[in-house]
Image (cartoon, rainbow, N blue to C red; front, side, top):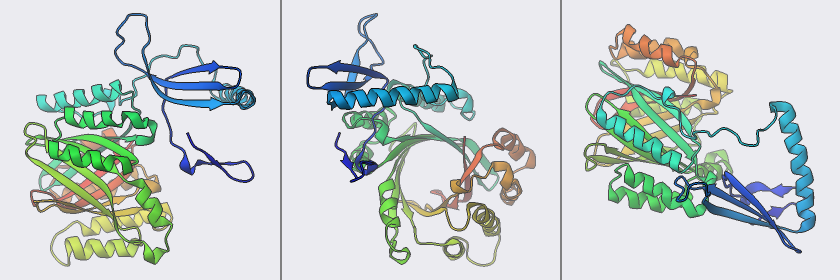
Length: 375
């Protein structure tokens, strides 16, 4: 692990990678101490024997090891005074999302894929962020959708091949596996999801390139060019030849009025019945709460189909779903969704964080809006 320090001794964390370990061991010789970090294997070949995959090793001089001991002892005391005593053998935890937070699914194919996904995530001991969504189009409300995201830096570099293996076991087409593998090193977040609609179950995998945003924000405002911020890999759970590669382009130099301008001219135009007024109202509420233009605008396209949509990431506003309730009602009424159908879903999610608003034309050429929300 290579570190660079500032002249005053403060560490520069820019070059640091993170390792998530659930097993640690210390060894010592006359000249050095070794801190070994690993991950317990899910399947143990011999009962009572703990097999561990070594993730990383840190070598310290005896003097640095003693300073670390003093600092770690103090930090643990502070932690226990704030949060209570640590048990010697903490209860085992499922790092994947509890089933209670998942939406209801109907088809056997979806149940099979969801069960397999969480089995694979648990075997890799991954800690996930969880997000749900619902999509509305004319006389259709699909709420059986979710995404999980994982910070890639919590996994040692030697285990990145396991991420591609998850994709393969979920049925990702081979041509997508190669694209996913090639782009994985640059990504900082990867994720998976399911979308059960009236016709089928769509399995999804994502890569997010956070470093590209950081590089864009270092430039002057008028020099921030659009860039590919995410790649989405989507395929039919029953027939993976029905698949699509989705590209998300971030426009980091747009203010609120610029965003609304692109939505008006690029997606909705003038006249006719469309949801632009609803979107404009949401943007104004989010902008006033977030303090201006502190949310991201993306445009989304897929190869070989008419998909053309936008995505507004509004997590920075920290709004609850119930704070945008009037717009959600307008949205569903615009698409002829019965109030009782919407209310049944809304009551389950009204206290969650309003995260994204997406819309435009989907891959079947239908006008839609999708609302994403987090725990």
